[in-house]
Image (cartoon, rainbow, N blue to C red; front, top):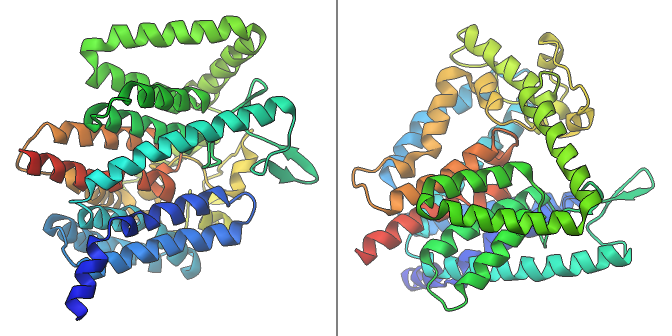
Length: 406
């Protein structure tokens, strides 16, 4: 009786989509009802843990890597300046690991995941069209930010950034990037080109500079045979948009140059400060870190970590970030876990890439990792449940799908 219920639970395809719904809905509600959004996100992780325990078919390499990482995690928590801060951000370190175990539990569910990706691209595309229509009409939309009596929305040069149903423009661009890669490689339906066009629309309308940069790099690396053709189409499309909205286009180019000089080439930004702190820790040969919850993550702000003042950390023009994170991921684990702990952690996340059998699906999975890891240079996506659920969760199903087909 119990075994039959267990088999029925695991074999139900729609059940495996519950964490996606909970985590994406929770992320969308973070601006309007943060408590409910947080509850939904953690409920999604709770469901994944339950599914993993019921399935109990664990990947040996991932399990071994997680066991090796666990002493660094516990040491970091108890070594923290505040045990509550250590536990709070310590749980966040587990997000990608839990999702990878869930990915392995779903390794034979790629067909339903592919259908979900197609559905999600279509849903976000039409939602964004509605968002644009309401924006042009001047309608105040439910996902706009309300702070200090003012209502604002994410924009660049006065243009509404694409957010679809997920509310955050960065994730909207990222999910369309991953969708483009997967649909282009694995979808065989007759509306494939329309779906790819929808995904490209999502990437462009997000106005996320890092996503667009990642997209161009991937086109060059993976689709090099058609790179010039694809770039030409993109260039012509952008030129038409620029000529149609010349004033906004000039403002966009100025904004693009400003962000490059501020966040990448410049030295006076919260991001550059984060990397300064990281290099300082490396130069001091800090092998085991300052403790979890000390730097970079939400807990370091909530519990008022003394590390920022000790390192004379400057927020510059991004003082609003000190309510959230430093918005740069890699300095976060290197400072908190140390050089060795951070390397063990990142290697644990990369376990699906460590295969003896090299197949054509492995470079493709590496592209998904590249997209996530590149984004994390300028964001906290490796600690963001939404980004992780639309990247790492597809790794084992894609690898298994290729193995079963060949």
